[in-house]
Length: 385
Image (cartoon, rainbow, N blue to C red; front, top):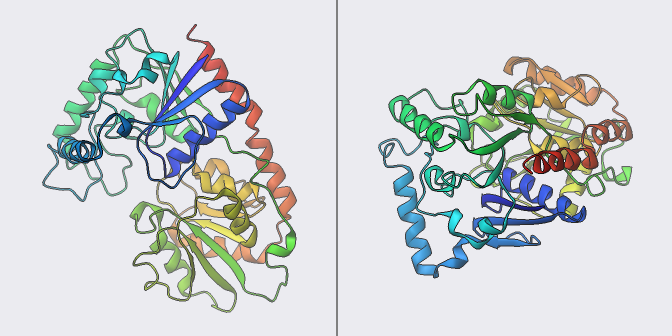
């Protein structure tokens, strides 16, 4: 079985999930390769390939710019809205690896996938792991920040997608039940098989370390961790976290922020800022140093960060939304806040409750058994035979 994973960029949450699955498949002896549109230079991934290598640097940069204009041609007047259509100047079906693959496994493929071109290959088998709503909507990735501004364009995009998938051999995977249900209810994937499989994480890497790495003194300030590649993204709720911390005793906690710190330091200057980190061993150390991880997202699928934190034994507080409420066992490995106004209370309860880190990690390991996850994907791959 030859599996080709496709993802637009090699950084970000979807890329992390895709490459983790790819690497675990390799460890299981499955012939897996991964194809990206362009490289960031920040990640070293085995059996990885880049579409940009088929072009000279100057030509590729021109194509990227033109491709962006093509993608936004119907929404050009509101570039601040994150809305992507089903067209691309790039044709992955012409890449040698596309022909090589028995199964083409799509992940986050915005601006890389041209639906009409790729799905015209009716002899090819596809699996698509959803990382947001974009594959089954007219262009929006989440509802947060989108108020139907491009409804007419959206209808056209949905029709393009439905026609492209007609008689196509494709199966859909959602990491969360929440997103899976939305996919089943959509016009685009409503008649497709939708499976729910969590994103795999190597549990031999993400685990509790020496307990001396985190605060043990009950009188010491508790280390609260927030993680987001782009803390400015309204959907990630960083401002909500700051509001929740406003009326808390500053002697009780210190805030650590992991992600792009540009313009964020001025908002909460007393926080400790890490920049974006790609080294997993360093990430494990940071999670272990934290007493609590808070994810105040307004809308989210199944964030890698929650799984990473729990596997390291660090409890999590989050809003009871999307896939997050499927990941936290309220009162056992963290707390869920039913709404924004309850976030402060959930944080305070977590800081004053003793969580046994080994128990938090053990529960997460059962939910994220990599052998079971890989086996579920293998069953889907084999079902096309």
